[in-house]
Structure formats: C-alpha cells, structure tokens
Length: 526
Image (cartoon, rainbow, N blue to C red; front, side, top):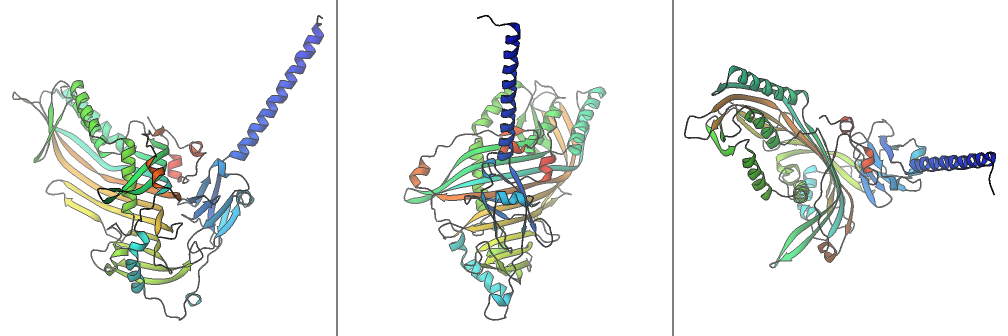
C-alpha cells in the first residue's frame, strides 16, 4: 500500500520525537551516573579552631587507608563514593569519628574532629610526671621488637609522590678565550649562553612524579641464608614537568654542554678541563660517536621498574627507626634533651606519651616531637626539623676550588601503625623534605683531542642556588600472602604517563593522596 506524503511526514515526525526522547533519557542517565560516580573531596578540621588537620588517617570501606594532605584535604575514588561507604577518621590526640559518605555530603564535605587530650592524673596512679629519659630507654630497648621485619610474606598497596625543584639564584657563563672563532661567532656563543641562563632563572624546573603500586615482600632461603626479596606491580605512574626540562643535574649539565658544543666543530672530539682537574670523558656532537655512547650507556642502566623498586626499598629502610642513622633522636637519646609534655589518645583508643626533644650535644641536629605508645614503647609518630642554624653534609671549598654545598633542609613527619597480627609496626605514612644549597665558581675549558694545533674554548661559570625534593609515602593496605603466591608474581616494565597539567580524572579509579595547590597550579611549558 502506497503511503501519502502526509503519512510519511507524520511517521518521520514520530520517529524524530522518539529519538529525541531517547537522547534526553541517555543524557539524563549519563548526568546521573556522573553525579553518582564522581570523586568525593573532603576536608578535616579542628572543631574548636576550625584549622585544617594535616595527615589525619581516613579508613575507607574498612579496606584502604588514606591521609589528608598538608592542607587537610582528601579525595575518594569513584568506586568509594557511594553514600553507604563507611569512613573512619582518626588522628593522634583527637577522638576518632565514624560516618558514611552520605553523611559526609550532609556535612558539606567537612569533618570536624574533637581534641581528646587526657589529663595526666587520669592515666597514672601518681601525679608524678613520667621520666622522659626512662621512656626513651624503653623505646631503644624495644626497637628490634617493634621495627624489625619478621619476613612475613606481604602485599602492600603503596602510593608514592616525589616533587623536585631546581631554583638557581644566579647563573653567569662568560667566554674568556676562544681559538678559531670570529667576533661575530663569539657574540652568538655569549647570546646563547645568556638565553640558557635566563631560561633557568625565569622558569626554574619542577617535576612531580606519582606512582601507585602493589609491593610484594618476603624472605627467601638461598645457600642456607635468608634474603630479602621484593616485587613490584605498578598500577599507574604519571610524571608532570616542563617539556624537555629535567631536574637531574646530569641532564642539566648535558644541556649546557650541548649548547656550547654547537659552537665548536661538530666533527671533532673534545675533553673538558675544570681548574686543576681534567675529565677523561670524551665529548662530541658526531652522530656516530653519540649513538655508540648512548648504546653503551643503555647497557649499564637499570630499567624503570628496577630503579623504582630500588628507590622504594631504600626509602622504607632509610625511614625505619631501627636501621637509619639519621634518627639519632630515637636510637641515641644521650645526644638530646627531652621534655615530657603529657599524654594523648592514639588511633586505637589507647594512650601515648608526648615528648619534645632538642640537641644537647654537637652531634645532635634536630628538634621535634615524639608520640610514644604507653603499652609497648613504639614511636607512633614523629615530627622533626633541623635546629636553627644546623646543616648536614656541609662542604666549603669556596676559596680553594670554588665549590660550596650543604643540606640546609631536612624535616618530616613519620607515622607508624601496628601490623594486623599485632607483631611489630610498619611505615604507614611519611612526608619528607630535603633541600640543598650549592655554589660553583670555576673555570671550564673545552680542549680538542689532537696532536696538532688545538681548538680551545675557555669559560668562567658561576652558579648559585637551591635544589629540593619532597617525598610522600602512603601504605594504604597491607595483607599477608603465601610465599608461593609471591613467587608466581611476574614483574612487568612500565612507562610513566607524561602529563602537562594535573588532572584528577587520571586517578578517578584509585584512592591517592590529594595534591597540594602548587601541583594543581603547575602547567607544562614547551
């Protein structure tokens, strides 16, 4: 049967209405899903002062532990954003608070904790203050029991963030002598070097690295000896930095050298000499030479997985009170003066002694505060910083060699939690900051390798500034595994996702540490 024009038009109109209804319904569903699945961002504050509380622990869905950042904020992943997800907020010295994500929304995403300071008379039989030196003696006596790894095979979900900064105050590079160059060529050299200096001063390099991984550890027996072994499964890794820039001193030196080499004969070989010292390394812009050099360098370089695992192993070891020499305010208490400040609640509704410390001898460098379990004398938390005027690894050869360097920043917060089986403690969270001052004022020469008349480029280099790094470490969950299960884990190489600006969507499927404003504001520049 043939349809009239009117019937065809009516059918088309009906079809369009149906499609529009379906489109509207789809958009509504997508919007609804977006609301339901979006990341939840909360803040933790003190109920009295309304000030933010950094490094509070957030137990999410009874499975993963987050911490609030230095600004008091935390973010939940999409899968942990449903209204019925339970949260437990705890912090030393405050009463723990339990609520759901739905209740968090009703509180305008702000959780106010109440202080839980306990009077000394409420937790001791007598009114005599505990002796801080006796407490520290008990801490030292229990270090092995509390912090030595028992080799139990475990799986840890770790989040690791490192922020690197290079801040030159002054860069002066001047050409003193050059053979085989015209005045115009030398002018171009100096212009390029000036541009190189201005670039690094006006736009100092920054780099932010985030890694989320499963970290497996166990002890295996080999030749009648037990060895510590670890495996790494990287779930996601990102790197945020200016394109083509690097914090690495080796890369910066390479960039500067290549800038100067561009004005030398690209077919020749050169050696660098600085003051009284010469380098045995041969440098050149010849493509065949650098291909061979890069190939040889690659052979002796660890892959990204191995490097990351080594860094994690070192970080955990370096921040263990039992194995690190840095924390002499814990294991060498005779170097410090201690004061008893009182007692406070712990996350487990137990009690902890609060001690402050400061140097009493020249070998002591730090000031800070310790929170020590009244039950087993474990250090649950420490806040430390270099005392005023103190420096580490100070080298001053300014007048002899034109070099001066020192570590003038060393501070951090460490938090330890008891293992699920009750045997010992593990590093739950760490926020560490290190900073170095450097000064270099030295002559530099590029000398051609030849028996004939040599090309020579002589410069004076003056460099002064600071470099620093901030590291955050968070153990979100820990569980035991059979040794056989860990042995079956296969490690795969990974690559960083290079990003030009922080994007919260990258971490929507995972819990992670909420970044600070400086990282959120950073945008890569070409």
